[in-house]
Amino acid sequence: MAESIMSKAATMEIPINSNGDTRALPEDDSLEQAAQGQWRINEKVGNPTVTRDLQQVMVSGPNLNETSIVSGGYGGTAEGIIPTSSIKGSTMHHSSTSSSAMAEEATRGVAVEKFDIMKKWGLNTYKCTKQMISERFGRGSRTVDLELEAQIDVLRDTKRKYENVLRLARALTNHFYSMVQTQHALGDTFADLSQKSPELRDEFGYNAETQKLLCKNGETLLGAINFFVSSINTLVNKTMEDTLMTIKMYENARLEFDAYRADLEELNLGPRDAVTLARIETAQNEYQDHKDKYERLRSDVSVKLKFLEENKVKVMHKQLLLFHNAISAYFAGNQQQLEQTLKQFNIKLKPPGSDKPSWLEEQ
Image 1 (cartoon, rainbow, N blue to C red):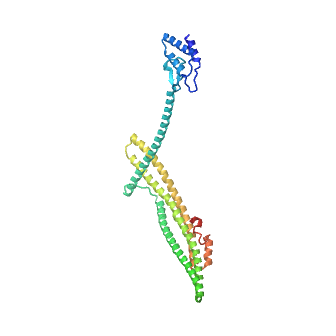
Image 2 (image 1 turned 180 degrees about the vertical axis):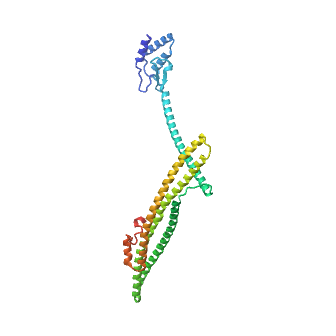
Image 3 (image 1 turned 45 degrees about the horizontal axis):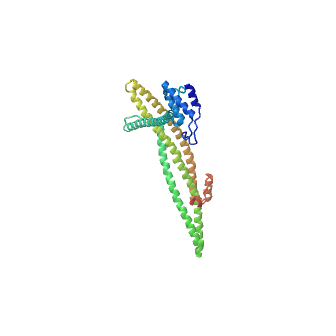
């Protein structure tokens, strides 16, 4: 009988108004009687909890904020009821904890990597500084390639001398440019005076033409000298400088090689226990790596020095011939030979005023 009443109560419809409130609606007598009958039955069998819950649901409606999952079927014990709010909360907490753990792990990995880099750099700097001080005070040995060191010294001396040539050539260009501008202004002045002084018209006219001719030849010579200066500047500040940068890398590699070599020799002279043997093996590997780097850079320096010497001879042969022919033709007053020299070396003169910015660039 109790099961038939429970089935009837569970299948009955609960009327709800538009506001979701059941208290304003008329009561269902059959539903009320069924609930009261079930109350009496459960009181007799000693289990009033289920009927009270059923009555509360029928009267006030289900509480959607406290929805639960029933484990074990309808009418199970309280231990089988799992609130869904607790499941949702635990899932969100687990997801947020997992994300924060992953972010923390990534940050820790970056920090460890940076620490390892700083540690390696610090040890390398310490060993190289120690080796450098030992060499300066004559306590440590250094690896020396006598032939290569001699070539490097020659290159540095050559670069200093070529820098002096470049400085003097630029000074000559500036002075000669000022002279050409003065000649140009003097020629314009002579031409103006020839128009305003009828009694000296011819004399002023001759001098004006001479100054204009000298100015034209001077501009041609300036083109040749500028080309000479540009080529020397490229040779000194680009080609030689590139080789010297490789030499600097080679010297740093040599210092590192000697530092790790000295460290390995010091370990080999000490006791041979398990810890020392592991350190010797590590030092041997580091020594071999720096030895390979040193030999590779030494080979690169040798090749670059060879090509630099060939390039220097080729460039200077052309530039010295240009400088000599242009200067000789100018001071000999041979305008045709001067122009021919520029054509021989494919030098094109810029038209007057081409170096000035356009009116758009001045805005």
